Length: 433
Ligand code: CA
Image (cartoon, rainbow, N blue to C red):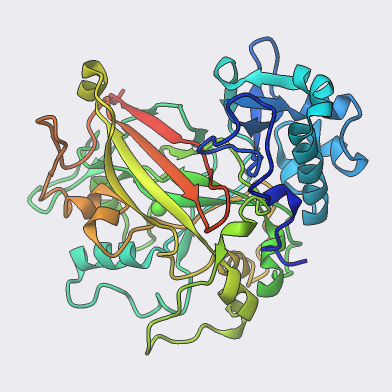
């Protein structure tokens, strides 16, 4: 089954009886993302976002309303089993949910399982086994590389290998959890000796997160043509970074304490099925770029493997919050500025037989557009802090200050389709401890 196939659940004419769901910017009935939530009067359970409400999947499963093949997974928390569902089972669940929420005659049965989202807490949706961060945003890689190597920003391996490193799963937190400014070892070029102090160069990184669904056995690579079957969903990911720690520690083994102190994810798992109408061709490689090795190359992946997603970064400073001012937009741009598709990341990660498991998280790496209005980090926007941003209220920023809130958003759009969104990935910087 092609992962870009659409069906009745994507019909733009489909309506929903839940108040406020029609025309909702993120969660109309065509989306139906999964999450882990606690209602005001209960513990964590599986849910589906619909408008400003959450439908209690666990209650539907307990009530015998869901297909038998998925009911067990919907009663398990956190949602690793739900994430691991085969695409056909996930489609059956999606069809059932779409029917419940569009058919007025099912309203009396389903409505008791609806909660106002504002009364609920959202959690990290799954137990994250492993976290890997890639570096596929080619404009980001070029911008960062240029800061260090102006004549030769991209290293020779970049266009052959999806570059990545193993990150830290224990410090991943859902949107809304504040992060504490990290302390670490810093040594500037003019410093005689390193010092241990709070980072002065705290940055965000705008990334797409990929949730692994079905895993693969150790020793058994995932073929590129099957890679999409191993992806259970998508989220937004903010890979917070301390640039001063990074500059001092990263050689020769790569990122370490500059990256592992906190990573934020949006709490809703947007399914591959919800994104089917928004599949687009991977942008062709520029003339002269090497063709990838065959284990990374699949014609269907090239023709349908990218996503028509618009990504946005907003900043709300403490002073803006006090003055009642709205956040300012720092950047916006398409997710298609990725040199490799997410399927290529799955195929590459497992190419040596490394086993992926349900609940593993892959970050794409910072996604920047070619022009400044689409740069996905402050490191790029401010040229390493040398050109601070004017925020319009008299404030400027080179890097983030305590009290600053970074908000990531994503919207998928296509002609003739109802747009869907990811919800927010938001976190506020707290002072160092
Ligand atoms: Ca990153």
